[in-house]
Length: 150
Image 1: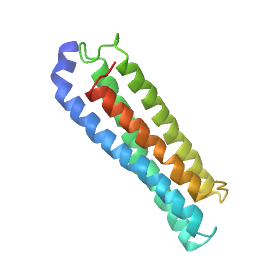
Image 2 (image 1 turned 120 degrees about the vertical axis):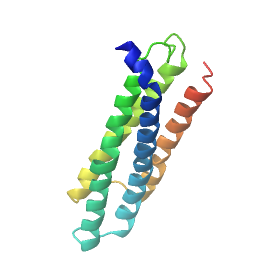
Image 3 (image 1 turned 90 degrees about the vertical axis):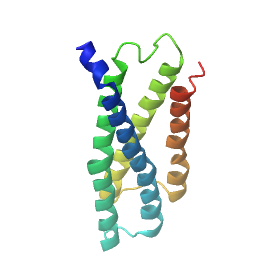
Image 4 (image 1 turned 30 degrees about the vertical axis):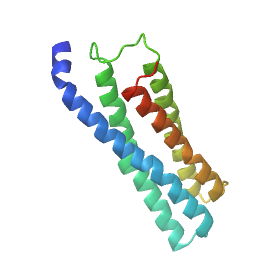
């Protein structure tokens, strides 16, 4: 099994990178949709229904499958002996950031459900500010993987 995983390393890595890019695209875009939805759209209008549909499809068709495949490929990479030095500090920092990013994904999913029910309580400014969270997490994750400062 280990030899098989070692042979699959380039494919797992490629799948992981593709999945992360897809997930991050959605993570960055969905809060922007929420900004415009909360600031410019009246509840129970045709435009409201359009935004609800766009947000739902982004979440269910792109973001959630990309998050799942990011985790699957990432776990596949992590179990290959020698790929990650778990005695170092950087993989643990990365893992914490990934867990926070996953939590952010589920938080966004909750906000999408609120919009769909006409119960959004947050202002566009809040979504603008919260949209910086994945940016900071992404910076930390990339630095941990590429620079490995710890």
